[in-house]
Length: 139
Image (cartoon, rainbow, N blue to C red; front, side, top):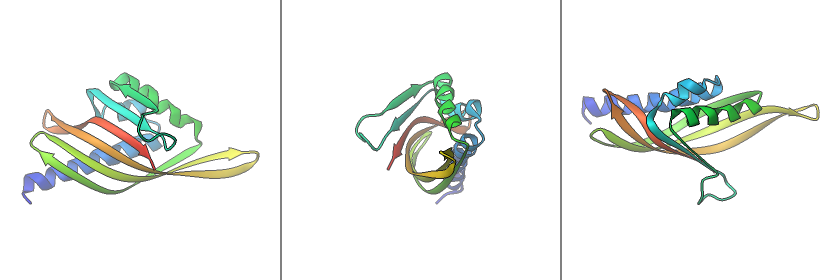
């Protein structure tokens, strides 16, 4: 593996980690900035994994979609393994995530844990990597 490929892989990992950190801190604008201007976020629910429940295109729509995290008191997105394939200034990858969502209901505290896979396409823009397309799959 070349130093360039190692650097690209580290940057792509950092991009995915920045998304998770931004989600847990409710930094919608910061999350949206991780996407290309015309980037897409498609969320697939376990009910129908073949059709996205939500599709948001562009940074403004992606930032708005992140507002849905506010219904949870606390979230913790724990990023696991990542595999990427780099082809020049584009890349694709799959990243695993366990996302904990804490909330109260009828005086009890609950933790809804989601097993998530991110299927991403990345684009190098001005020397750095951005997400051009993210499919968020709830397994």
